[in-house]
Every structure is written in structure tokens, then in C-alpha cells.
Length: 166
Ligand SMILES: CC(C)(COP(=O)(O)OP(=O)(O)OC[C@H]1O[C@@H](n2cnc3c(N)ncnc32)[C@H](O)[C@@H]1OP(=O)(O)O)[C@@H](O)C(=O)NCCC(=O)NCCS
Figure 1 (cartoon, helix red, strand yellow):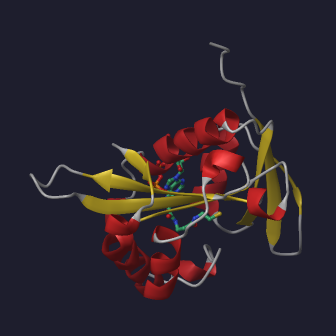
Figure 2 (cartoon, rainbow, N blue to C red; figure 1 turned 30 degrees about the horizontal axis):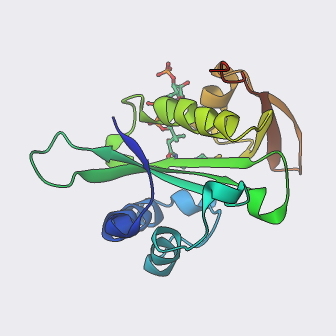
Figure 3 (cartoon, protein in one colour; figure 1 turned 90 degrees about the vertical axis):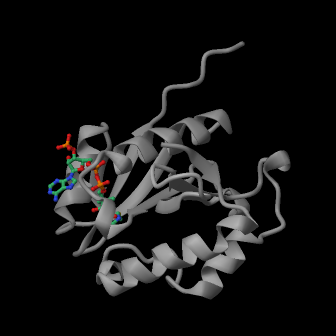
């Protein structure tokens, strides 16, 4: 499944994904920003650039199996923190409720790890609710190590494998 940085042509699809996540009640687990059309617009039309290594990353997963069209956005992942000057980005992911259990989240995690390592990050971090068992199992299987963040949340850290030098 292709993963791409979010661009203006993804705006409607990303807004549709946010709407499906909100309708499914997933905002209780995943709230890096409001899950609104305005947020989709801001993400897809942002003007910063990764060229200076200071921009955050917002990626979409596109399921093109439906035919010749542009494909459906079935997942969203972000790496944030660079824009605020942090060396360790914070990762977040969400998969469309109708497309879960197909390995999309696992693939998206590997993709985001590669993006972060490619940008020179040595580690990534994330926050997860203690009762979000699906996400916790995924992160544990990928090697994240956790410590308490609050009574309801854990912080996970993963040391990234560095890209092989050319
Ligand atoms: C958590 C989430 C991203 C998983 O997406 P997914 O595409 O269904 O996950 P995958 O199919 O790639 O499964 C990867 C692993 O996640 C775990 N997992 C996924 N669904 C699970 C479930 N219902 N119960 C237990 N573990 C589950 C398993 O470890 C699984 O690995 P396995 O298939 O080898 O057993 C998805 O449920 C989601 O978007 N939830 C709402 C948003 C959210 O909670 N985001 C994370 C915020 S920290």
C-alpha cells in the first residue's frame, strides 16, 4: 500500500477519514488535533518544507484497489516535534475503522520509522492510553518501551535503526 506525504489533492480524502474516526468514537484514543475538515485542510495545504529539517511530517495511506480512481485514504500518520525544535519526534497513527485488521497500521509504523530515521532521528516517542489494547500490542510488538506518563497514559520510546549509508 502506498504511503505519501499529505498534499492538497488529499484534502477531501483526509477529511473523510477524520470524519469516520470521529464518528467511530476514536477521538478518545487519537486526538493530535481536532478531527475536522479544517484540520485536514491545514495539514494538506501547509507551506513548510522538510528541506530545512524543521517541518513536521503528515502522511496518508492510499488504498488503490478500488479501480483507476485516485484511491481511498485509509490511514493517517504524523511525526511532530521537529517544528518545535525537538530532536525526538512524536508519532501518531489512525486507521479507518472499515480497514482495520489488515496490517495497515503495522506497515504505516514501519514507514514512519523509516521517514524519521531518514531525517536523522535516533528515536521516536508516542503517547498511548493504557486501555488502548490494540495500539499497545502493536507498539510492544515493534519494540517500544513504555513508562508511565499519567494515570491514564503511557509514553513509548523506540530506538530507530539508522539508514545504511550510501
Ligand atoms: C490501533 C490501530 C491503529 C490498529 O490498526 P490496524 O490497521 O487494525 O492494525 P494492524 O492490522 O496493522 O495490526 C497490527 C497489530 O496491532 C494489534 N492489534 C490490532 N488490532 C487489534 C485488536 N483488535 N486487538 C488486539 N490487538 C490488535 C496486533 O498486535 C496486530 O498485530 P497482529 O495482527 O500481528 O496480531 C487502529 O485500531 C486505530 O486506528 N485505532 C484508533 C486510533 C488509535 O487508537 N490510534 C493510536 C493512538 S496511540
